[in-house]
Image 1: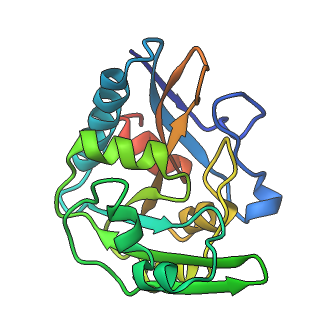
Image 2: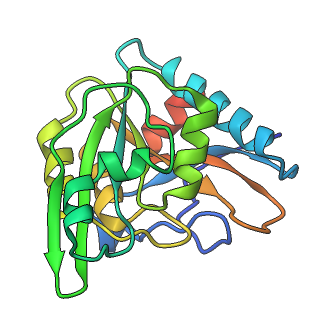
Length: 211
């Protein structure tokens, strides 16, 4: 296992690509854990280690799942009945916790649903499976005076997930303050894989114990 802590993960690289300050409105940094063993257990252990690292930073840490459909769903009665939570539950195990309403996005291409779930349990095996298989689902941590209404506003409007980073809409939440976003490092056949948190550099440094 290798630990990385850097305010320069926004530079071009094959693990995590973050927008420039001019594009997003603030400077973002990242810190995370990497491994070269591509076994599922290694992936879960690193996510568990990173969650523990974040939870140890402050006593008031809360975790949220920002969930949605990455691809457009056909406009059928079944899709409208299943919406978000029911459709995800058919494929993966969702964390326990209160769920928001399901916000509908409609276009000529079909339907997408989005929502928020506050995680009252973080069972790493099922959470890792969910985040690895559902590209439009993201885990975030908040504390202190975070603004839940800003998170809700992002969820109401939805997003599409790029391959190497969280969507711009979700990354902009890190400019609000008191929030970090979990992001996978490497995918598929990349030699190095793992997990990172993305946020303002002072929060990333604090979580990883850097002055």
